[in-house]
Length: 177
Image (cartoon, rainbow, N blue to C red; front, top):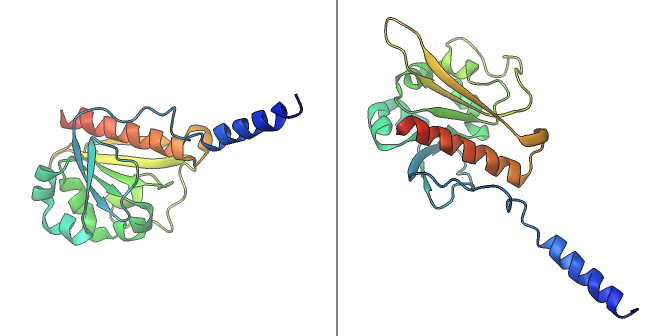
């Protein structure tokens, strides 16, 4: 019995150490998506999602082509300050695909409104991990569709982040269908 206890503890520690944090998260399984990314490419794509690195200049100067070629845009946290520049407001409102501002606790507001500074805009929802925006109005009527995604229990774990990305991919698929 004394020899069996260390062996059982070793096996238990090995199994706990091998626990995959994303094992219980269902991966996106919808149609193939092609998503433009400004900033660091996320590691949460999976087999059905491909990422294409783009720049703000690409987005501004090729808005129609990007809307035709891609299913959505992700602007990652490290690019949010630049995304706030007023020169991009018209671009965001011209895109025919959704744009997601990753890890913005200030939602989409400072990005799609001129004169609103990201650094000075108050934090709206501290538990927010991503905000999506799509202008669906016209020249005569302002109308948009927005989405908010929170981390489960406000915990930034690999499985919670994967779950948010899966929800975003499902949203993108529902729009592009």
